[in-house]
Image 1 (spheres, rainbow, N blue to C red):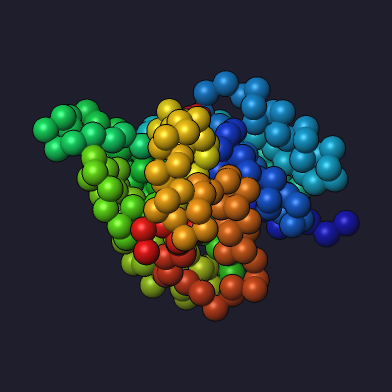
Image 2: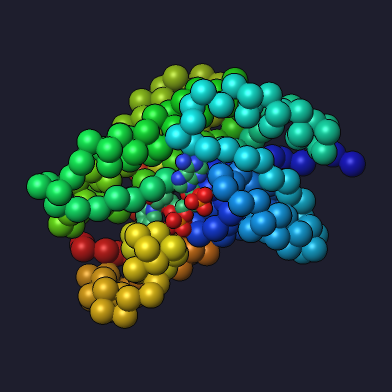
Length: 253
Ligand SMILES: NC(=O)c1ccc[n+]([C@@H]2O[C@H](COP(=O)([O-])OP(=O)(O)OC[C@H]3O[C@@H](n4cnc5c(N)ncnc54)[C@H](OP(=O)(O)O)[C@@H]3O)[C@@H](O)[C@H]2O)c1
């Protein structure tokens, strides 16, 4: 049996990351789901993926703990070698991230450090740690936000962190291009997950006001973002790198 293509997805225990794990598994990728806290959700997802005929394993990763990335890389390579006979990966989806929102006068240095530490520092140094182990011709997909294009009150720090992710995406495309590695960012609009306390899923007033701002008339669902990430991971988009792809149902056009 041929060794499978391998995709690593950060923050895959829930939300967009979990949906992406399923979307990539359905397309034949062997999937590594990283989780930070309790493993139960990630283990359940592995069972579901295997029951559906795919394959997956889990790996623990705290994106805020850059000091752990060297050990994470070693154990990731050991685990994929044990299960799939490979020590390199094909796709890295940098999905894990946090959102902290508030107006200028309420922002704190701790919030700034948490946002930048997870969304920017964690993403950048995870790419640094794993890039040598992404096979030539691989892909990296970084999750940004539609907020880097339009403005919404109280989102300055969060948006700054994702604008940095987009800048990292564009600039690293030049460094990784000689190895045929494509790197793109995907910018979801409001999507019904636990994000922001689950507001986009659970708050009917917010949902309805966001729907009014959207050409397609509703907030997005996790699988709609996941399918777009899977498209970026596919060879159909093999000539695309350094791009920002927005998947927002036409938010605030
Ligand atoms: N939902 C939206 O409307 C929306 C829109 C635009 C962009 N995004 C972006 O999409 C990505 C996924 O969001 P989501 O909607 O799926 O949110 P979510 O349901 O809140 O999930 C966030 C995921 O990130 C993980 N995570 C957070 N901090 C981490 C850390 N330090 N180390 C490792 N994992 C960490 C979480 O793990 P735990 O379970 O351990 O907390 C969880 O798996 C984020 O980057 C977010 O900024 C979301």
